[in-house]
Length: 251
Ligand code: 13P
Image (tube, rainbow, N blue to C red; front, side, top):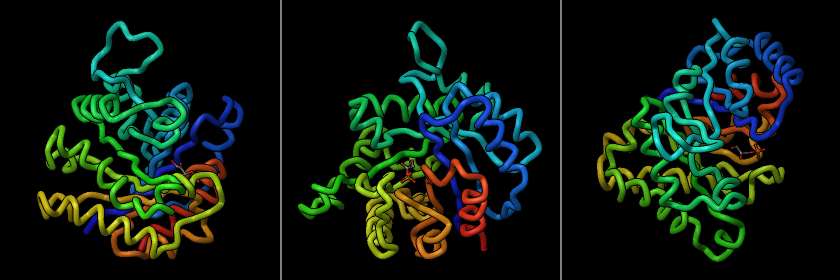
């Protein structure tokens, strides 16, 4: 059985004061013990969150990492070994905001994915189609290609220690959610694509859904057979709402 996971991607939100409030709010939540819970603050606040959540069963992740695992002359970047040292366990790679707004492409994303794993952290690979691509019937091809980029570079075993987040771009921050059936269809296709190479890896890998997940739709989404939890944006900035979403992933 795959252990469910809920990760909160805080994106570029927060101040020291608002982060302190969120930490306090998370501390008051009754969180399920059968779900891996992760928060991913802006890197600036990772230390504050690690210290603030000490003793709680909430892991900390980063939203990005450098193209190399170790320290070096790379202005403005943060190495995944530094993230590990700071207390992180997971790192997002390939979020659509970085693909689209920063222009990150497969070659860079592959290097980041490898660097994250090399340092001992777990990458959370984000994949998903735009509205135009969905309307053109290209969803499974687009998502399949994003997945193949990693498989071709590193082999299927790369997914023995990775998480995949399916985030349809049209559902991110829009209030539009993929229906549980729409999401399940893509998740099943992702797992089938992995299973063609290695059935055991495919069965073990956690597939999260992301895109306007709230407590009101989480139970239905997380109830689908190939949806193993969620990657939460806006709703993760509200401790009560995030707590409710985490509980929705528990059994
Ligand atoms: P929203 O939950 O705000 O739609 O964001 C989803 C997301 O991009 C998480 O990485």
